[in-house]
Image (cartoon, rainbow, N blue to C red):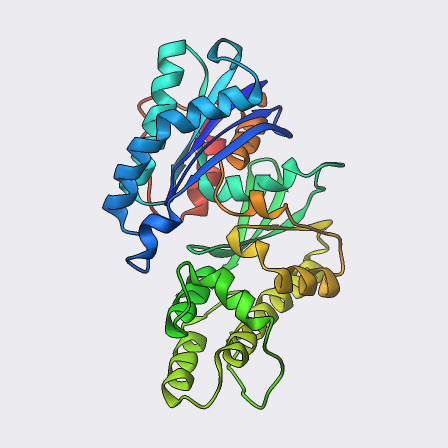
Length: 335
């Protein structure tokens, strides 16, 4: 089954062609990083207008790169949410319009579920269930138990800032370019252990996360001016990675998970990858960086498995903008 998938939840316009949920024949992403860098963050109205400019060329390039035409597309999928409303509407309505115009099956995909299914784009055997999924990105930090396709239970998540959001905000505090996350990680490579002690919010009795206090601690340290940027970046990254890897590995052990699946933009962080592989008692699967950040191939992978189960989305279905794992579950049960 050739699935044409479209993703536009934030500031990347993306399209891909994915076969049977496993093989990406193409994955095209038009980034808006340079456009939003002047503002120090994503401006929703600017993002949606740029999606309108990019969506046609990106879809055409995805088809051309895959070596197929619309006549060879078997189904269409689009990111339904969560994300920025104006951005989501561009990609989601384009996907629905193509499906309607060609008389093809259509499926709306949850963006977070898509991140998890990036792990199905990795060569080799499919992930094993039950799988503990760490979804860690600029907008989300969640620990989710996946018992099977479409079967999720959210066991923990951030109570304030997402991990990627904290990285970006700390990058801004340190005067690093936008987006801050990759630049903080780069600066940390020049740092190392010091007497600086940053807090870790373990929140005993839960598998929730909190990064706002850590971010505030960095603010006070930067204002004091006692440490250089590499030192602060290194200590901050270690604090975030310690909590993410620590809670994930402990929960994987308690649940008897078969595998740990890591997803989202922060999954590209080398230090996090190292610590998860070192600490987790079960195999850890992490997609290559190109499938960690927002892309449409992951949406096509999730859609491939759900379409194979006979699921379809009505063309009257609208977008949603909030992080709601119950909505992922209900979308499967009600289909």
